[in-house]
View 1 (cartoon, rainbow, N blue to C red):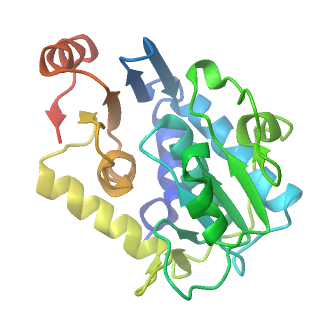
View 2 (view 1 turned 180 degrees about the vertical axis):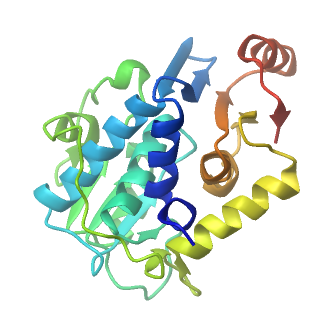
Length: 245
């Protein structure tokens, strides 16, 4: 199996080679009047900054862990893919008696849950339009968008073992298995290479559906929050989406 098939970083690299300027992830929040579009190269820059922050800033690697308690959002994509690129396994669901994580990412509203992960470092994401910083940062935490901007937008990783854990939990999932599941999910949902997937995100969809499945097969995604059905239909037409979750 090739690296592109067996790691998330490989899938993003394939998207870059195919067309670096093609819209890869578009995010709407109708309550804020926000539309943010990331090409493959723009998303890759955010992913690289995140991975550099983890590796060069925090000194983390495959023997460390990250807690990620975030909703579907373009910044969440940068965090998750940055962790996978750096080879840092991710815990997305707090577990009783789990070992402390080395770094945690979440929203201010989930600060208590983040503290339950007992991280050495905590980064908060306000998920504001234009990646605006938080108005106030609680003690013991840092603002992700402020900190990550200090790092380079190119990441040169050590080789990531496809058989190393990507997601932690009762049954850890390797990078290779994660991407295999993503391809299966895409096939089962009817998403095709080059397609454009619309995902309403008023709930909290699994990253498998809104991020990894499209990435694994060379599709793109439109995330849409706080929109009624009429507006979702209008966005689907404007963005020329081909399928919907």
